[in-house]
Length: 464
Ligand SMILES: [Zn+2]
Image 1 (tube, rainbow, N blue to C red):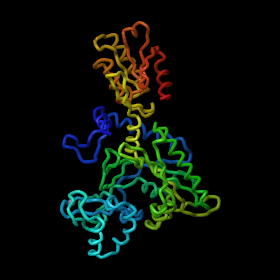
Image 2 (image 1 turned 90 degrees about the horizontal axis):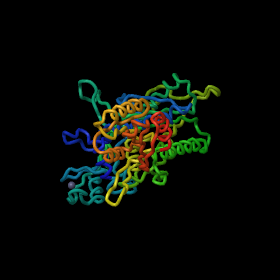
Image 3 (image 1 turned 60 degrees about the vertical axis):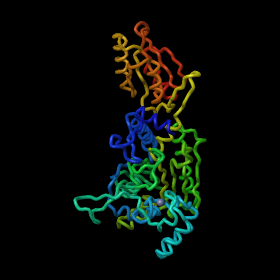
Image 4 (image 1 turned 60 degrees about the horizontal axis):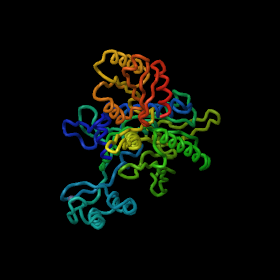
């Protein structure tokens, strides 16, 4: 992991945020390579899940919404973590993390109902000393801590101006269900997709970009008719499970590194009938990459109750009105990026005293597709030919022009950002109109005629 973090900073993938001010814990900026990587992932996802399907529409809803949205969705009340604080060192901990989910789930209700005195007593039995400073009997009774990031609209900071940065992109889609129906003529089953930022005031962020307070999601809400039996929703669920698995493979992730975790019934959110976590073998352990949930009709129903608007779908043939049920595939972008980086990272021994780091991204993900390298930088004919080639290639590929340092060093630089092909213009090129194309993965070099260069690159990029 340290090697990846250092490479990401060195080569401009990911920087600590507000670096010159000492950074901000768990906040990250995406550099020139990082933003290309992110954009490639987002636009490919959109292409696959929106543009290539007839049953999907896109949406880009606001980050700051009417606070009533979060009351109806249950976030204002239920979206909280049980926290305990140490009297001595004032560190806060999540109870469920210290005692484990199983134990916590059994005593959860007790802490809702018991008197303060009983709560204090019980927590001291459960956590006899502070995990941090080791002080005995210093842990105070748990309190709920809302995960939503609060902010204020307007000039007065009071209750009436309180609003939140959205903790998920999903609700923006549910509240637009009517607008989409009225404007798009879509019939159930159909889905909405959205890519955007969400915010959670996580108590225990960390593991690099894995869990951050500001993050980006790619999310789908797929609306289906009220299932007559289990098989009906299971078929849709299975369709989306396969789609997600295909996407993961498309990212260049070896599927043997993925574990599909069927969340046990007792741990499911109360509105969910089934949830699968796609867990990935991150360097810090097996952790959730994506989630797929069957949310029933929970959300539309709640928004109808909360807003008073009719959120039902009217079947044009039967005339029947109903709240569609929802299958929800969720993809975190930072987690996608991290898994892609981990998967692409390779350290190879080139000779007994030489290793190279090479990022073996699939061609479509690679931030830079082609590097154009004049063999020498002080020979005018070579430089002008290289510039011409660069200008032409740039119209179809993301390219980099690099004339500094030795050719070997330049190759290594490109390996570290995962550029699939390096095109070198040398003295011979001036005579026979051919250039050397070096392959990132095999390091093999072939001579290609300049007139055929674009076709060659296009064809071979698709094979990566
Ligand atoms: Zn302490």
